[in-house]
Image (cartoon, rainbow, N blue to C red; front, side, top):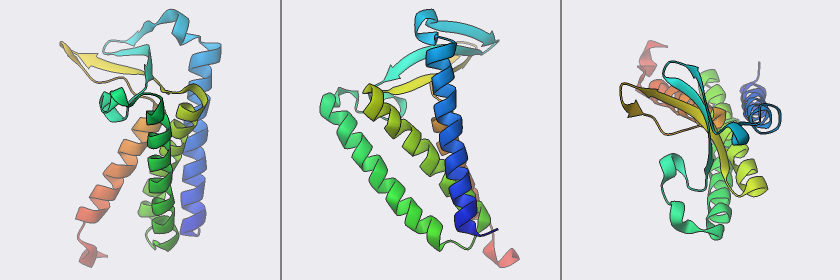
Length: 157
C-alpha cells in the first residue's frame, strides 16, 4: 500500500475515533451532567473543558488562545503532511497520520466549543494523570512511534 494512502487512512481513522468518542461522551452518555463516573479502579470518565494546550499549559490566553492554538496546530499538521508525503517508511506514515488526525480532532473542538473535550482520567495510589481524550492518546502514540523509529538502527534494514 502506498504510504500516503496508509497515512491518510490513519489520519481519517484517528479523526473519526476521536470525534465519535466525543460525540458519544457529550450527546449520548451526557458526561457533562454526570461530571465524573468510575469505570475501573484507576480509571474514570471525567468531564473537563480544556481551554489550554497540553496538560493545561498557557490556559490564560483567553479567547484569542483558541484561534492561536488552532492556527499553530494546523500549521504543524501541514508540515507533518509534507513529511508524510515524502516518507518511504510505513511506520512513519502511520505515526504521522495518527498525530495529524488527533491534532485536527482537537482543533475541531476548539473551533466548535472554544475548548477541547477531555474525559479520560487515569489515577492510582494518590497520583492523578491530567484528563485527556482519544486524540491526545493517538498523538502520544504517534510521537512514541516516531521516536522509536528514529532510535532504531537503520543499518539493520
